[in-house]
Length: 260
Image (cartoon, rainbow, N blue to C red; front, side, top):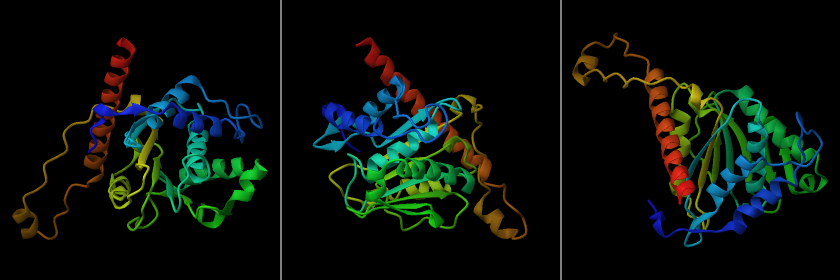
């Protein structure tokens, strides 16, 4: 874990991401066909993620953005994806994944990103689209973006440079999250890998009880026909507790900055 006490803020890096996003075109919904205009809270989120640096490496490894429905969450996800694929955060042979809990949600994220590319001739020349696998390939760097879901097979073998997990709080278990989270350690790049996890309904997560204790191994082995309690609820409770803990930490940091 990095010691962030000596971190400095690189405003130019965050500003470059903001400028790139605001050159994109809104593909649908409010402001359709117009340049992307980030709200102040979205700019604050981007600066909080990209500004803190330590020895030329990004300090922030994991970030959570929670907002109500119909506030441009998916469009922001798609814009951040493109910033890492062909924008100021692009690296050679990067692997970018937008993860969702089902195929339909994963398809929506890819659709927004593809529409942004279709609306910009310059992006169209830089990116090869593969709709059948919900994939984009940066022609210059060889970086790849793919939309994936928890419903689709194994995700082992990935080497992500960026993962955006949409609606993490609604995940039935943490299998996909853990596979992607533990894949970052294999990448040794000048830019620290990041995880941006936008959530849509964190404020509606109920208080989660402690997960049930696992049955003793001897008892489970003695009765092969007995079915153990399904893991989904315990896994989801663990995710929810981690989400609330991260949000509480972010709130404390924000309060300290406002009071300083």
